Length: 99
Image (cartoon, rainbow, N blue to C red):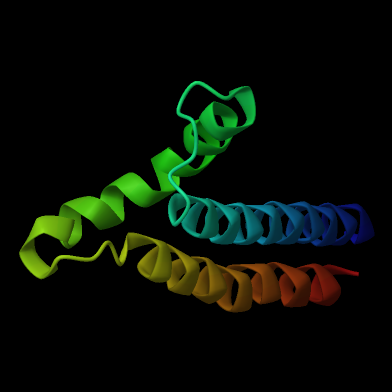
């Protein structure tokens, strides 16, 4: 059973790294949006392609035109923090029990 424990712990570590990366990419996107970046820049396009699938569901929940400010990055970061504390910790603990 220790193999499954190690599998769950490894999955938790990878998921934790992906969540951290998305967290920082969303923050970078929010900061860059203050300076009206060139939409044809490769890095800006890459940043939008990576973060848009995460932000889109939150934009549907709270459209920016209703309140005048886009709070989808804040909601996405809160959801990522929730996933990090709930899902990643659960995988760590479950993997530890199987060791």
